[in-house]
Image 1 (cartoon, helix red, strand yellow):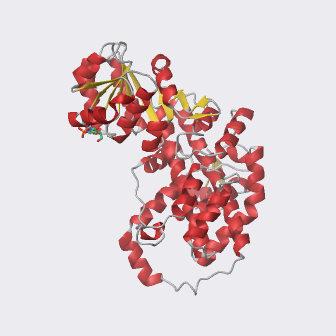
Image 2 (cartoon, helix red, strand yellow):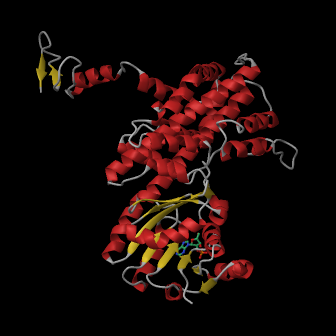
Length: 477
Ligand code: 2AM
């Protein structure tokens, strides 16, 4: 019998996704450019389900029932285009090409256009949760036509993670919507990890706790409203010792790498004009860590002995303050990420259900957390809310934590501990709630040096002041 679905690209993610699909009873045809990868996979896992091994894309296309759905799981970028170019002439009208890689959403928009011209459907499918998620249940964000989702939906919903009986899979919107949302999701993951890293640094450098003890603190935090996959994982990692006997975290070089989705998120946010300071600072913090020459130069000139900059804190109080700062900063980072998705949706004409996103991120993906249930509830109460920050639950949490948050940021500054994400989140919060911002001065300067005009507090209209003229009269523009 023909296969229900086809998949090409059997590196770890593709292989695991194919096995997940097969394990859920769907007959799947599999292919890889280098045939050995395909044969090796079938040798090892062929018993897990109904696989058809294909040695060429022609064979793959022939093996799948029509209208066909073919998932591409190759490296994002040129490789994806190469496979699409090869695949398109082999397909028939109405077939569906699914890109399950980490594509940039603008590439997905472009590919969707091209395939539509060929009478084909193109789906950009964001798959979150890494290798483990791909095999055992990822969070899946699908962008594509309703028609394409009708066919693809049952398969992908069956392989997704499940939370409270709901599959972590959604038809987010058309064309690039799935990959856009996946991108911001990754950006939020950057912010989450940076906030965790800053918390660890403070507990170690200011509170003087050792990695194991900090691991215990995180394990304790994981019992409360911070409960999440990443907090739990942090507890495990901090309590793990390297074979050399040292704490694992101490043998790892302190240069964070990135594959680019954080950078894409920030680039998109700049285009959309959405201040996602948490994600941006997290991305820049990774980049700072990699500038080893500059770090060495700065250390030589500016280093102080730890004693010189020691700040005294009450350990238990401080641990609790850091927890509050982490929670408040996390609320800010998520509020910003959801703002970006709302703005992106508006810009591209996508009707994205933000509450549904929070729902499908509760399982399968790296940012899965109890917290997302609160976000889901906030959008259920108020689908068009202005900012997550002011919804009752989060507003209360922030009000409760704000003193501790300030204390932590002030202590970090006094102790010379970098807290870009904590600090910028607090500034964002203060910026939003401030009665008057110094933006007024910026507008005045712009009007002076560049005649950029300004608006007034006391009447409507656009004005320019004749700065050089006698009496400096203003002119309505
Ligand atoms: P390979 O096993 O033949 O290298 C991750 O690199 C996956 O993408 C692998 O399955 C790899 O196939 C595939 N891949 C990378 N570049 C490709 C290309 N230009 N065409 C087809 N598959 C490609």
